[in-house]
Length: 268
Image 1 (tube, rainbow, N blue to C red):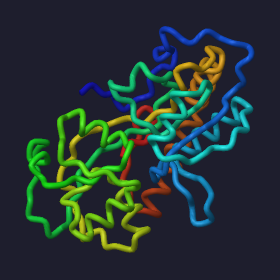
Image 2 (image 1 turned 90 degrees about the vertical axis):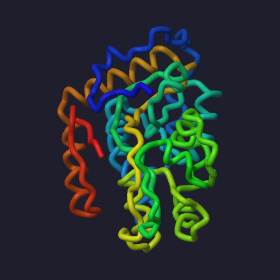
Image 3 (image 1 turned 45 degrees about the vertical axis):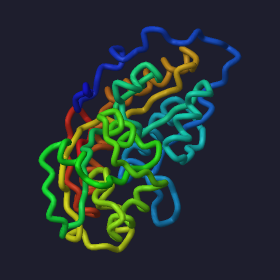
Image 4 (image 1 turned 120 degrees about the horizontal axis):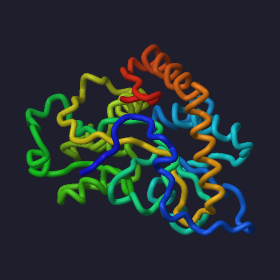
């Protein structure tokens, strides 16, 4: 499985080869959609949308003059919306080979690990994906990219639910053998659920991915180019690295989440 390295690609290098024909009747961005994926995008204690990737997108909105309210949706619904409508921006979604030709890829936002988590008292050792295939059940979120990726690898032991929190509860009650998630999200979930981190362990780091800001395939060429130009401006101004460093310190001090910065991006 090919994946993109943890670095900012020059944005002219990701300009689509065959943008949709520009249409002056088409409006600017009609929707901006993300999913709950802490610390990239999540609701704070006051119910306000925040997160590392959210701050990047909000900064891009200031550059473009866009005032569209960011919406939260389940991943499957967000992708369906983007497949049916023009000028829809999504962020926090992984770039995979299967998705490559379905969207315009504006800029990478972060890089993260995909990990299988098990209960600490589970003696099973997972050394590779073949060991994971032998498990009775692995919890995934319906429509999530990890579900999509694991099914593409031939996994038949996946059990889908509506949220990562639901999967954690099912793992705790021994209705699942493992769940597929990511380190920073898992730590956030455990804190929110009031469970002890030492009750669970990372059993297998099985993939690395980049999450991106992307736009629906049928979007106007001018709108795609406008956001790509804003992304380039953000990178060249140094503001992108400032956001990364700010969140690196915030995550370390508040959540004890370790991260690195490569090419102005946070890598978890």
